[in-house]
Image (cartoon, rainbow, N blue to C red; front, side, top):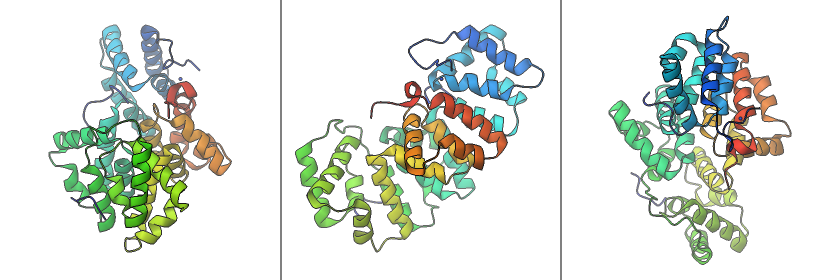
Length: 327
C-alpha cells in the first residue's frame, strides 16, 4: 500500500453585522451585547451565539479580554455557569482554538468509538495542523495520538490514517510543477499505489495537479481506479482513499456530502472547523448536489435546540466574506 505504517486552551485563531470583514469590531459594543444577553430575563442564547459567530476565532479571544477589562469577570466562566445543553456545547465549540477543538473532538470520538469521525478529522486536516494536533494531544492526554489510532478496528483504514499522520510536508513547495505531475500520474497508473501518492512530501496543489494529469492522460475515474487496484482492501478503506482524493480535488464537496448524513454534533464540528475556510462553498456544493439549502436540512433533521443555533452560525459564517478563502 506504500508509505510505512506506522480541553485545553480555547480560542485564538479558529458575520448582518459582518465583523469579520474589513470593518473592525467595536469591542466595547460587542462586550455590552454579550453582557445584555447574559444578564437579561433568561439568558439569550441566540444573541450570545450571534455575537460570537460574527467574529473570527482570533477576534473571540480579544473579546474575552475586553469583557474581562470592562466587567472584571471571566467571560468563559460566566458562560459555563449560565449555559446548559446545546447552547453550552455550541459556545464551547466556538471558543476553542481550531487545533484544540480537533483534539477534543478526537478524544470524544475515541471514547464513544466513533471512528468515522476520527478518520474524517485526520484526513481532512492540513499537514501543519496534524503536526500541531499530535503535540497538543500528547500534552493534553499524556498519550500519543498514534496510541489511540491503534484502536481503529479496520486494519486497512488504520494503516491509511497512520501513514497520513506520519507525513511531514513542512518543506513542500506550494506551487505545482505540471511536468512532475504528469510523470507522477503515469507512475500511479502503472503501480496503482494511491496511498503512496497521498503520502508523498508534496503540497496539496501538486497532488491536485497530479490527479488532474491522471484523468487527462488515462481517462480513468479515480474512484473506479481505487476499487480496481485496491480490491484487496476493505470497502471502508477504499472509501477512505476516495475521500482523501476528494479532499484534494474539492474539499467543500466532501464536507457537503458529510453534512448530508451527519447528526447535529457532527454538523457543528464541521461548520466550526470550516467557518473561516470554505463554509460558503460548502453551502453552494450542498445546494448543487442535493437541490436543497443546507439550512433547510439542518432545520428539518436536527434537534430544535441545536438547529436554531447552527442556523445562526451558518447565516453569519457562511457568507462569502467570512469563509470563502482563495481556492
